[in-house]
Length: 359
Image 1 (cartoon, rainbow, N blue to C red):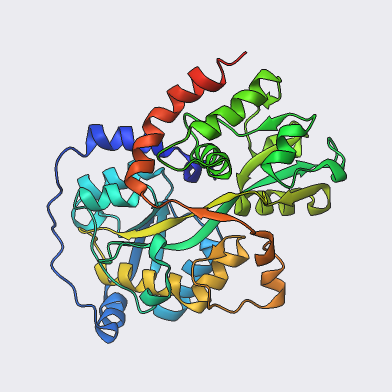
Image 2 (cartoon, rainbow, N blue to C red):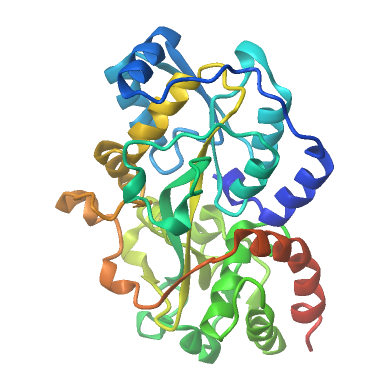
């Protein structure tokens, strides 16, 4: 689902232009008592989400469960993060969206613009600190890490890279997607930066790494879509693990080799945010709780997204959809999402100048 991959940079620029003022709330304060939430959510009878379509991370499983358990009708409008926040800001009354799904690096901006309702779900203490706002304005429901996916029709399985060092020595083309417009590609640069001593405030090691690939004429301009992967137009691609697994299983899992770089990957997530002006605030709170429940977390895992809660037990058939925990040897997390957000604004131009301009 391409909208979920749109860039943090594009989001930040759009937010700067469209969210210059703070939104005022039209939703009265709602109770955080679970009995009240369930009773009132059932009375509301429906929930409207943005950026949470059936086909992404098996959201359909969660929406179906919420419907059957709490009799809530659901509708979603798929859109990128910037548009989600714009909807939160401008649409009021009965048509106001209730809940959205945005990149963790975008959620702090929404909070700063006073667009969000805070709510600490029942499972709040199970969520790692890097994946939530301490006051309850946002929390990630699932996580992903940057990996390599190798098409063994184009590259021998034995030559599939297991590290950034391997990738640098290979003879194949490497695809990231558009660094100026795709969040997945931007996180790929960040992962390479971390692996070579950088961080969200110092992307130079990552840019230098890809500049060397560009000089060797090894960077592919082919976009990292499932269609291009299926057509065999990608040799090795860098992407989120949940996308790599999903794409591989849709096409032919035996054809692809998915590896987590042993010298460093970055793990981040997508946050479920509740609109301060939600038309159905209790249904939104109920949905956040359900997403973080064991059943909700398992639903996400069925869609190849790793649960944010580490204490959820996955049955063997669900666990088999994911890479083993042992594959994630060296993982980095963004420590400062504000710094990362600002870095992505400049990253497209830096990529053009420092990487694509390398010769």
